[in-house]
Length: 148
Image (cartoon, rainbow, N blue to C red):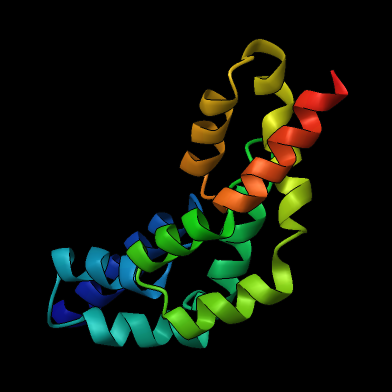
């Protein structure tokens, strides 16, 4: 009986944990492992049955969030998802189907910075930190700077 109460308490805690934002399977497993190693697999399986453990959906959500106000490039998104424990093949599959045109994202990211920063090197560093490819960043900067 004590085990059933502990199971329910851990399941409720897991729902709270995933209520703030979607989580990768690795994040959920780490959370559960901190709470109880004996029940973590059972809880993970139950969350999977309910549709809360799905790295494809998580990757889609993550990419969508990274294309918002402060767009990120493929390299940075891939690094972030790898650090969240998402498998490389899932990341590549979702990136190829979900991500917008990289050039448009780089232009969007550069819009506010190009108004305040005149130095091409600083603009290049900004786009590289955001995970955009160097040749793409150079093209976008050249197109943006020549329009002024």
